Image 1 (cartoon, rainbow, N blue to C red):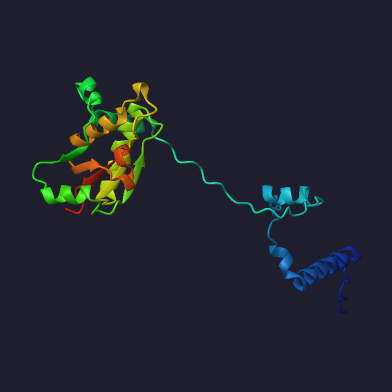
Image 2 (cartoon, helix red, strand yellow):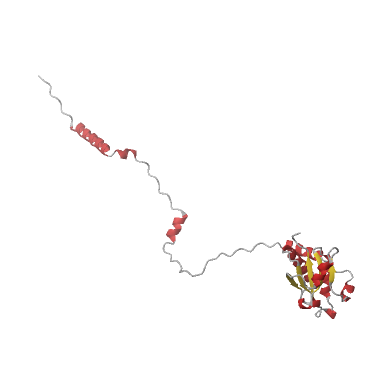
Length: 219
């Protein structure tokens, strides 16, 4: 007599069905087995947050004015300027016998040793073209001394050979004496770059001005 095959129990059959279904689902979507872990979204930076905060802001209408940046002032070396002014003051001293210098009324006339007589004669006749001018009206003695030194220094740098210095006739000074006139004469004689000077012609200021001949700065 032949044995009959025993049928599977219902519970075992249902388990097989579930396993088969799971295998099919995994075969249909294999990417699900290797999904990357969830990463948090990056937080917005400050600029993004600011734009979001002012998204409803209404910009002001244009004013029509140019926005020009103003240059910052350069630093001023006050101590160096004070030292340079003091050098100018010390470079030109007043005459020792001041009373004698003030009382004299002689014409301003001077030439450094070695300067040809013809050069001084030409200067007195107005043969040199005046290239610069300094007016000392309203200056005190100390102010005039600084102004004369600075003016002559600038003329040497710019190679101005012949210049005029207006010192006035002294009508507005005490006792109506030509104080600045004699001071200027003494200051000019101390300058090595001054070759000669003389009283100006009438058309150039007469007794109230002096014409100065300077060395050439190109030599």
